[in-house]
Length: 115
Length: 109
Image (cartoon, rainbow over the protein chains, first blue to last red):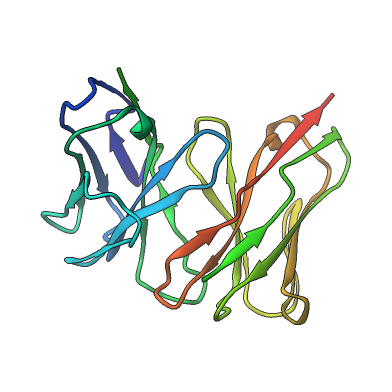
């Protein structure tokens, strides 16, 4: 059974139309991450939550916001999607912010298209 | 900051052995991980090295040399299902992973 679930798998939105991507986890992990991955590139971390503590990466555009209402759920809000925001968005979790063997468990991703 | 370098693509035939090298530059070193990602799929954890030496998990092994800031992932007895991208990654002091650009492994019959 999937432990990190992302919905929807595919999302099409219009230029400038807000969109929300969702992620849920059954692992009861403290840390949740949102990554953006473009074709043939490495995942790029946008932000992460350590419990309820939100941590934004310095180069994450203001257009991207996140919410974590409880341990199990995390949302990625893109306020005004541009063509350059078309990508795969990956959610991941880890048990804690361990430095040793910090295994991250990824969801299957949401592929966002912007028309 | 951190940077990791790995080859962009490796091609090999079924049954062969492939070695994917990863060199890293980090302000602090907390280990080297490897993730596999099939096309359109989620990255999945393969292995982790914190100390020098070889870690073996079935057909896959991972090696680390901290003095050389270098590691590799060894794929043995290649199968068609091993065609995927492989990422090396290092955690920073916050536990966040910095990924290399990924190596696409293409397995041919």
